[in-house]
Image 1 (cartoon, one colour):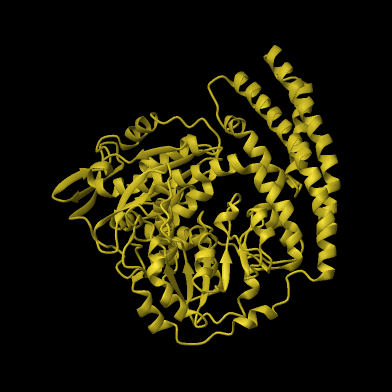
Image 2 (cartoon, rainbow, N blue to C red):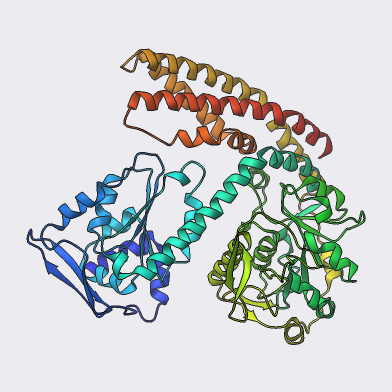
Length: 603
């Protein structure tokens, strides 16, 4: 078996998406180099040399390449747990191999290779099965769409500040533009994750309040996936956002009514209703959405697509059927244990992105975006002459006419999100119906008038949707109540175990402060803590309590994954942080218990 077969077999077994993309790619080499070759080094190893843009780059020492790599890796300290290491450039694997040797089992190495030609050359001429087995490999123009979603799954409040970014020698010279693009992308992802972390930190208790209050609505609710068989997905879904361009599209939107499915974001609902248009679905997601950004009406019964952690006041004001489109971990586990299969969607952190993802999940083949400006119109931010003041950083992005338009950082994150989802769904046709605003790559820019004339030609039976039975019938509701009663009773047991854990941590801090060796008592206490931790982890109610705990203990959670060169000091710090986290979870129980009792009375 040659090198290529060995490497390809490992990719086939361990990296199915990369393998799938390699099979689809017609031009496997996609040449960007004038030359690429291997030379023998003084110590009998191999060095990789490339020629690009009339310059030659030796990617390894031609004397002692492994020694060079060992010296290079010394600049990086990998002390913390669950560290994410981002490496730009694969080369022939010698440098990444040293990172793999240095990192811990809990750490993750992500290698981004900007040249498909280098990648295929390495597969054919080197054995890199060990690198392929121990790192996530992202190849530009092959599986690069995996990078963003993968990083979002790896980064959280415990490790986002401990990332390590490294660059394979000479790649910063040979692939300067690719590197700039890569670094910008990584920074954007980090900014996006920090927004989510700060949201969780700031709204932890609000999430709990919303979830427990909104559980009363599951008796008159459906999962969004329940609608898959009822919808005619051959006609377009129209996602109506609140951008200034909406105003010029009202008459065409009226023509689309009854020949498409109209999804409207909460903020623009009253504006749309005032124009005489009744949407087919409303979408809301925000945990603290002001009521005035939903509706001033008290009789709205249009189906509401929402999350159970959406603002409880919005769900209370709404009088119709609730449609649950996405789930936090706690609700997902509850539905799963009650026998409901869930379809996950990428929410994207805005109401319009949730609407878009829901349409993809429902199987629509065409989605028309209306009012998705993602840019200012003069000073106006929203339809209806609204000029919202915000401290969000202003930036400039490419407009639909090719010129730069003024946007905002939060809108830019939504822009990137749309582009990523569109690239991941090549079979999906997305029409961006606006004459000005930010360009969303991957969409077809078309006036709504033309889009309605071309695509909205088949009547749809909206009334059919009213015939759908609720997800939980009366017998299932009894199971829901039994499930919640079990969790309510579990709170007292969990609290006693947490109080015991706090006491054990106090003893461990004293024990390690006065002794240099680990005593038998300390070992026994560690076993007790492991047992308590397992009980907590296995408890489904902890997924709800964790909103409170994470919000109150952000700094302590981060410190638990940070280490110094002083083992004794690190151990004591870990117990101190653990104690504070246990105490925060006890507070969470005291906060949740009365809310859970009220929930049981209303389900």
